[in-house]
Structure formats: C-alpha cells, structure tokens
Length: 235
Image 1 (tube, one colour):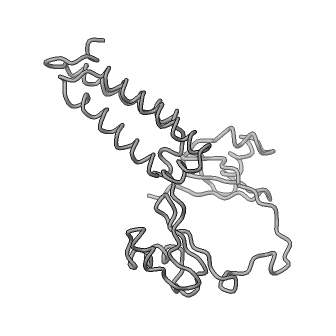
Image 2 (cartoon, helix red, strand yellow):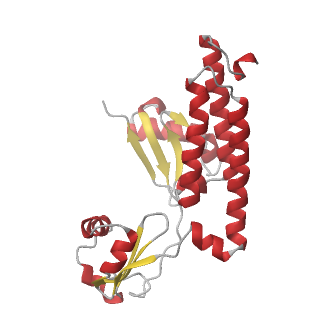
Image 3 (spheres, rainbow, N blue to C red):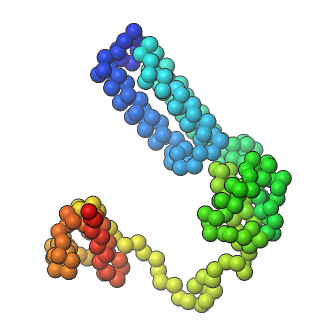
C-alpha cells in the first residue's frame, strides 16, 4: 500500500492502482450523495463537483502527493454535502439560499427585463429555450420561470394549449410500457418472464414471420396487445 503515500516516483502498476482506488472511491462517494448530485447541478452540487474533482486530481497526477489526505478531505466533504442536503429539507432559509426561488422571466405574455438581468441571461437565450419547447411566440406564454437548476419552465395560456382526451371527452386507454424481449442480439429473460410467451415461441416467431435470427435483432418489443415489433441491425 506504499503507492497511497507520496513518493519520489511511482511505477506504472502503482499509478494504475491509484487510479482504480480513486475511481471506486468516487463512485462510492457519489452513491452516498445520491442521484441529485449528478442529475441536476445546483449551487451545492456544483460546489461539490468542483471540489471533489480538484482534490482527487492532484494525487492522480503528482507522485509526490499521497492519497490518504485527499480521501480524508473527500470524505469530510461528502459528510458536509449530505448534512447540507438534510439541512435544506429542515430549514427553509438555508434551502432558499442553495436553491433560490424561481425567477419569473415572462408574465402574461410580456418579458420581465429586470428579471432577465437578475438571472444573467439574454433575450436570445430565452428565445432559444422556448424554441426547444416548440413555443414560437412569447405572447402565448402566461408564465415562464427561471428554475434554480438553470432550466426554464413555461406555461401557455389555456387557449394556447393543445386539447387533451379529457377535453374531448375521450376515454383514455391505460398506459403500459412494452416489454423489451431482445436487446442487442440477446434475449432479456427478465422481461420475457413477465409475459406469457416462451423462448421457443420467440425464436419461432422470428424465424417464421421475419426470417431472422436473434443475433440479427437490435431490439424486439411486445406490447399489451401482443404486437411484436422487431428492429434489425443495419449495415
């Protein structure tokens, strides 16, 4: 375990061992912090990401630095991060500090220019984000908010929203995901066992209907009405 301590030089194997330990330590730390730490980078998450990256990078590039101090520092930061997240759930003032309230960018079809400056974004950026949501006219928007994670949520006026099945008095069918029976040329037996079908049925179906082998299928799904969809590899 000498490779964990600072040395004048490290062998190739010792560099590899340092990288492996750092990799799994980061995975373990991220697992403790939870999915939020990498799904949406907010103020606390961003500070953690920068700190962890800097701390672990130095002993991975400088043989004169030991890993023990870096791992202790990272452990302390993980504890502080977890405490900060728990504290934000209990203390509203702290929560509003690390996750500030949304900033209204558009109200009643009008751009709030003062809040654009507060959010530090331009009109071009705002329009670009609206185009991603297929909104071409600001006047159609009743409210648009700048969220703490840096995204924009927008709400159209009711008359601008597309009709739903409820509006048309249509009885909706219950939602269900199709089963992915084959993925990348291999049968997913966990998914297959959720259906009433067997492996033999699936193979025979592919042969008789599509004249293909399982290895030729990149994805095969079956829905609640037993409709089989097969997608083949394309050269």
